[in-house]
Amino acid sequence: MIRIPTAVAASSLLALAAVAPALEAQRGQLPVPSRHPRVREALAYAARTEPQTIEEQISLCEIPAPPFKEAVRAAEYRRRMEALGLKNVRIDAEGNVIGERPGEPGGPVVVISGHLDTVFPEGTDVTVKREGTMLRGPGIGDDCRGLAVILAVAEALDAAKVRTRGTILFVGTVGEEGQGNLRGVRHLFGKELAGKVDYFISVDGTGLGITKDAVGSNRYRVSFQGPGGHSYGAFGMPNPIHAMGRAISKVADFQVPTDPKVTFNVGVVEGGTSVNSIPSTGTLQVDMRSVDTTALARLDAQFRRAVQEALAEENARWRSEVKLTVKWDTVGIRPAGHQPDDAPVVRAAVAAGKALGFDAETGASSTDANIPINLGIPAVTIDGGGEGGGAHSLEEWFDTRDSHLGTQWALLYVVTLAGVR
Image (tube, rainbow, N blue to C red; front, top):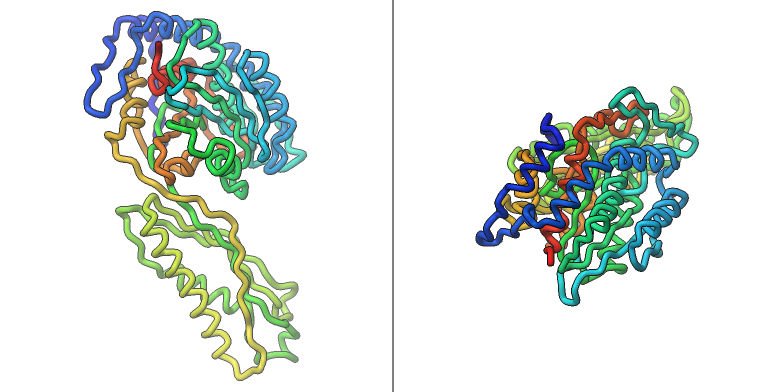
């Protein structure tokens, strides 16, 4: 996602929000309530309390949340939601934390969420170091920033007594990263909130960009298997690593379109025990991606053919009764999806940014929003403000300069979707 640099003072932005005319309702356009007095008060509160939001970000980040072990951070997130006065605060069967801010009966239901999990294994030092405006620590931007912004939005709306037509659900999800395979948001839309959500906002990462398209991914672990043997004494039997190499060679020659963008990568290879042994296994892990469901399915089928061809070629190469087999394991399947630039949920995000004085650019990525987008539910992921880098590394950093813009943007966007009364 491209980050949009901003250097406008908070006071100037608040003044702009106070005088900017509410956008007229165009075809499919949701009006941004930037002139509503209580919304203006909430925006001012969010800017004024941004130092507190940053402290929330740091303290949440120093609670370890390794993959599939988010429970401690989830319990603390629940406690903080309860302290803010959200209703029906709970942890669901998958581990997601959910709190409600009720609206009017029949109003839209808007989810605003961040993800609780990180990519870092148990035992990682998650201490956050501060140097002026710079914060450094694993997960400080992805997604401790999003988690802090969500709490700040809830607090600012309450402090300014903003009443919305729609119900807003504040959520911390589990399993967004890697092999978590979006398990938290899958549960939300498959069970917990199935059929109940009108709009979904994920706050994830840093900057001021919009993810409107879902990059789908198919990830597999493919193992060629045989009995193995001595490299000299058993010579003449098929070799799983040779079969794996044949498959990789075929993948390397794939031709894929650039529009829609389609990508592939063999990122991990494993197998063998010694240089003088025919291995019993040769394993590769592949990642294939696209925003286009059909193109991704086509590439998936091509990869499957390549694996079967490699298996047949290696078996046919040797006059041996020993035959290799292949085993498939799914590492993760994330659905793809596309939304037009003029989709109301996208235009509302852009318009909310303009009301605050910046132009948010749109792009594609793989986030919690993949699931609702694929289901046809209006959804985007927005950045949380500030500037950051080094995501998924121990050197991850977040610059807090002008980070209040991310908090204000999330607030103005969510009330645009929920409607103000």
